[in-house]
Amino acid sequence: MSRRVVVFARAPVEGRVKTRLSDALPPAAIRLLYERLLEHTVARAAQSSDSQLELWIDGDLEHPFFLHLQAQFPSLRRVAQSQGDLGQRMATALAGRPGMHTVLIGSDCPALDAITIESAFARLAAGADLVLGPAMDGGYVLLASRHSHLPVFEDVPWGTAEVLEITLSKANAAKLNVELLKPLRDIDRPEDLSEAERFGLLHGLKPM
Image 1 (cartoon, rainbow, N blue to C red):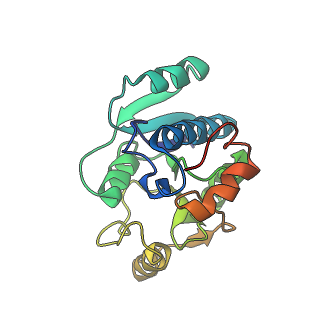
Image 2: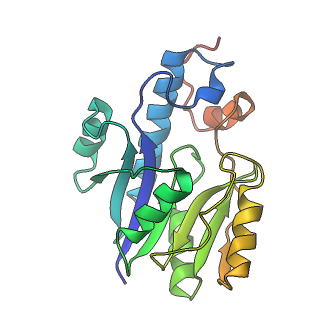
């Protein structure tokens, strides 16, 4: 079965990325942290063997930082995200390659590694319809599926603590076979910066 890892990203423009960190870091530091998180994520995703690596981008596909990533990872495929809310954009990404086992991740969970990605692929291969990697804040940091269409993306209050619970409810109603991975911590708010520090991603960044 063909496999791919899809990383959702946003062009690293000051004031448009990780805005909830603005009470702790100045805009330039937030942008640099985001770039470090994204590069860290792509590097780990690239370690997943026999998988096509795709970067689905909200913003300028030719942003210099994306060209920098492309130079490091020549097989990286850059794709423009669709319009709509996060659920619609994820649904489009899944539908873009019917018949492939897909792991979809964001760029704000430094603990998410190739072992976690391989575990998601293994569970799909064993028959799971949907694999979720819970985030400790009530969302999820990974979604994997062997189907190109899933009934779990509509009417979800994205960015809230109910995302995982509502997604599981929708999946159960659709009688999907769901597997959960271990919860991981993502970096959204100032109190999450200790996780960035744990991975050495705050080096040289000055707080407010």
